[in-house]
Image 1 (cartoon, one colour):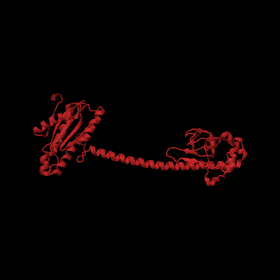
Image 2 (cartoon, one colour):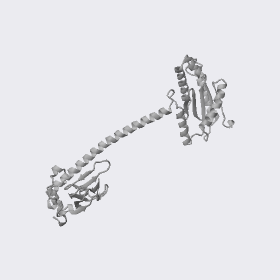
Image 3 (cartoon, helix red, strand yellow):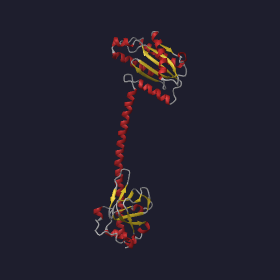
Image 4 (cartoon, helix red, strand yellow):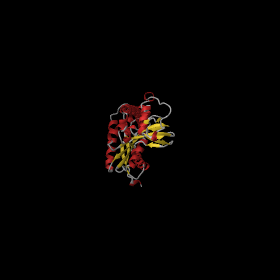
Length: 342
């Protein structure tokens, strides 16, 4: 036994490897390792190596305790006398450490580097072979345990992700409901305002027109036929707006029998063409004289949207035109030029 490791052997007899687990050396193995290893005293909190360090040294604890912290929510280990660690660095060479090793108390270790480990085979090849067999089995067991933990963690993570996706989906649905008119399925006033705000953020309000649409004599329909018939009329108006809307147009019901639509329009003629189509379609359906009525004639106020303007400005212009259309008997489109209102 080398002079610098004499006295490292504890007085008590260690447990057998079978009783204490594969990480514990037998007395014979410890004595063999101590013959060529170097003694190292450690202080509490002293770090032996960090996770990710490349290591070529194996350690055996003679006295004291060492903590192995594997991180990533894996359980830490506290090792005691005659337990060994870091053997992969010795067996493989330049192996990346899988844990932080920190002394938990005052202690004594036996350090073995690769050049110190190889002579052990000449001293007692059978004993060393038994150690290597157990060390390899321990590595395999640890890897299997780690894989099992990772699989359980993946299952837990997948479950958490599924839960988050479901919650996100519910939140999206809830948000969608807050933007959607329940009766017609069109955007409601809030949804329309959010659409305008998003377009403004994206600088996409140029070349747009606003149609403000109102049912003619809708109160008479409700009074004569009831609110269920009135609801069907509103749904009919919504269907006409959907059929008239292009892929870049945005119809909405903003309250009662009042609708609006943001339309892709480069000139007044583009906007008026769509507005007249909506009025003409409603008029043609109204001429069928369904009983009870399925539609009402419509009045529309139209104006172009100025990118630097605001909803109140555009609404005011379109509302002025709508008011003229209603006063003229409805079933028509009226235009309001922004410049003419100044």
